[in-house]
Length: 342
Image 1 (cartoon, rainbow, N blue to C red):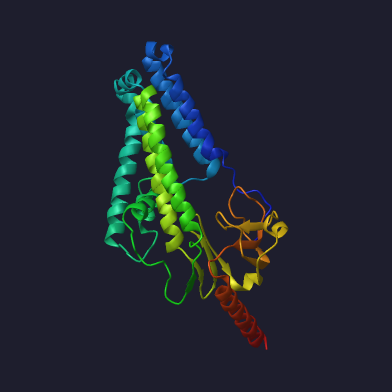
Image 2: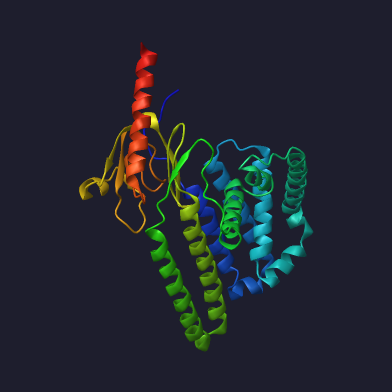
């Protein structure tokens, strides 16, 4: 098997972002007077553009998609056209049953097959599987959308309902907190945001009630995100596990660095090292006080940063116990490897 270099570009995101842009542009053109004058032609043209854009995007992402992917794409195109078309164009499309035959059939097949698969998975429900809800929704929705929906639901549950719960420290691991210095600053930011939202809402309401309601909804969602982030900082400490160091920063970062990939751990790293292109600084609103030097590069921090990670910097409330424990585990790992090679 040929290993792909870390510097090799990953899959292009263009097939993912171009179809929605094309469909949004076509939907905007449906608001022109010419579309209202010829609604049947506009409806057929929009149906063709949406179906073609989605199918070409699917073929660009996967050269040989399965039949379920094709049916799901046609179903999504039909639902997109019906939901985004203005009333005159939608009425003209509904008045042409022959034009809706393929999209409606695709929606029926995809929905029926998906519901059957959902019922089958519920019969084999495993509460211990952390991805069970994503897998379940992926039978009806695209997997990225299902993953996003589950993540949003978990975040809302965290922000609204999970109060005074114990930090997530599984059995056999040791947790190290980093929220002591962050919590006061984040709570102050939350209070300032509440004041700013109230004042802004009152000012905008004098100009436009609709704009004020939209801004109020966006602000409320942002506050929930901020509350969820503040709570996740305490609930997601950095862990020393059996396999490696699980570095976390609330729900923003969660990655395990294997012990055999760590060459050294140092306290109070210098600025040039922290700011290096191949260093990953996950300390929030503060300077890191610990840095892991990696013996072998780890995957890039995200798809937007192509440089492999060779150092990980973060901040803990009590770095000394972490240093002692990690160095003991690294020494034990080296000793065990040395005994195994004899």
